[in-house]
Length: 143
Ligand code: HEC
Image (cartoon, rainbow, N blue to C red):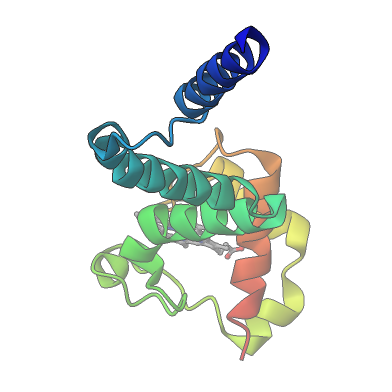
C-alpha cells in the first residue's frame, strides 16, 4: 500500500518537473507571448548572418562602386563620358576614348586619381585596393 502510493506521488512530481522545464505545460498564456517574438528574433539574426557571409570581394566591389558614384560621377558621369553635372564646366575628359585608353598606363591612371591634375581633384586617402578598382572601372569604359 505504501509502496505504490509513494511511486505514484513521485511520478506526478517528475511529470510536473518535466513540464515546467520544457515549458510545455497546459498554461498556454506563458507560451503565447514569446513564441512570435522568438520567431522574429531568429529571423532578424538570420538576416544579419546572411549579410555577414558575403564574400570579401563583394564588399570591395561595393566600396569601389560607391566611391565612383559619390566622388567621380559628378564630373565624369556614370559611364565615364565626362557628362556628369559638372563635367562640362571642368571639361572632364571622356574616359572611354579608345586612343586615350590605348596610350595611358594603369599606373598613370592610378597616379592621377591619387594626386589629381588641374581640375581633377586628388584622392590621396583612398586605399590602394580602391584605387586599383577605380582603374579597372576606368578601363571598363573603353569603347
Ligand atoms: C571636379 C571634377 C572631377 C572629379 C570629381 C573627378 N575628376 Fe577625374 N578628371 C577631371 C578633369 C577635369 C580631368 C582632366 C585633367 C587634365 O588632364 O587636365 C580628369 C581626368 C581624369 C582621368 C584621366 C587622367 C589622364 O591620364 O588623362 C581619370 C582616369 C580620372 N579623372 C578619374 C577620376 C576618378 C576615378 C575620380 C573619382 C575618384 C575622378 N576622376 C573625379 C575632373 C574630375
